[in-house]
Image (tube, rainbow, N blue to C red; front, top):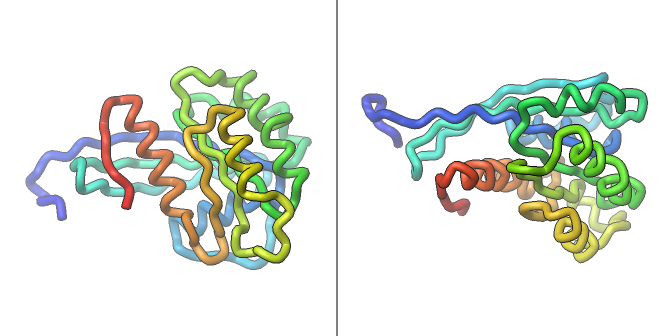
Length: 189
């Protein structure tokens, strides 16, 4: 544990979560921040902003995260460019049971991010969510890995917002990759 008298570095990062409606963006944030999952689906209107922080003892740092949950509905597309301002990382999220959400990562979400914000010095991961729905899977893991390579994502991870599988790992991996831009290195267990 970090001694209160010890000086620690403090980082503040803005991350955006991108993907079609009902892929689990809000649920991933809820699971990461509050360790909870809500069965009832309530679509995000415009954008939802959640703040949280994590202490990384191995590098004596506190990382404050500002998580922007971007609405997936098409009617909010014209506002997205404003939401990207100041972000240093993104999670592109699709639902492994809905191939359309997977296809829209490249044709819609990645293109928006690239066109409105650019890719230079930005770190983004590809996330296949709802891995707990094994019997309903319609996008195989290999396709996810291939798309991650195609869009130059820093990593590909399958998660389950419902049971928490790999949720913390996804956010920590994004933090790890962003801190790497500042030559700060730490390991994820």
